[in-house]
Amino acid sequence: MKHTVAISGRLARVYFILLKHGRPMGVREVQRLAGLSSSGSAKYYLDRLVELGFAEKQGGEYVAKVNKDSLMSVYIGLLGSVVPRLIPYATFSTTLIIVYYLLARPPVDLLLVATVPTAFLWIEGLRLAKLIRKHISE
Image (tube, rainbow, N blue to C red):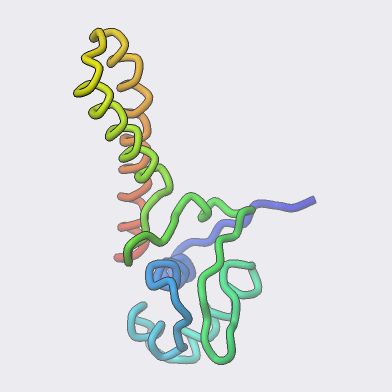
């Protein structure tokens, strides 16, 4: 039986740095970006991420891996930043509603039915984005 893995604190910050950059990174580069005091502590966090299945080691560098059994899988690296998966879905849904409105001029009640779920996508996506900013800045 698999169990869900959650990470927090500095370990989460190191993971989000790897995810944000989306490329293999060395220990010293991660140390500098995470604001860690030594390369030894950076290596410890990177090795811990590998052990938990959040990263893999490629030569002497580390690259983020999406662990599907983790709560962290709700985040993706997109255009050099880390965003909740819900944000692209909300953007697509909003665009679809706007285009549909402009082309078909549907009744207001139909627009309301489409807009309410999209609003929930935005609310939850922005809540998760705020949470990630908090973890990265700590």
